[in-house]
Image 1 (cartoon, rainbow, N blue to C red):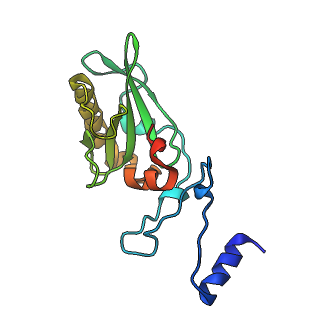
Image 2 (cartoon, one colour):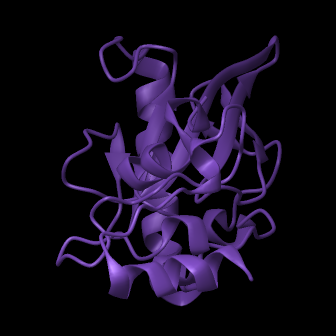
Length: 175
């Protein structure tokens, strides 16, 4: 008998106990979603497929394009675990990593578009100051994304909110 069938049958008999693969130590599987079935249920998260890097959101920028001042766009990662990362750099190397998630009112992103939130990954967990040149570059990236959202179907890029990513994959999912 498959675990899914067993758990499905147990719901009708007594209180169901859900054991998700994500609760196992070291697992990269999604964690349980305690809000499932409510009006605020996170319906994406674990169900989101991986996807190639969404370069179409950054057009006309490409790798090596100047974003702001001396910062250039180094890379856009593939979409995994409900989000992707953008790296900005200088001639000396990587200057900033930006986590891109679905926009959410409860997270104070450095910049947002109608659909996406851009968070600076600097180890401060939302409390560290963001370098002004990095903040300006993130705002510039958001402007580029905003101009591409409608025509690039940004709502079809399989990203989730910051909260859902952390809930499903743990705090280290953002980096």
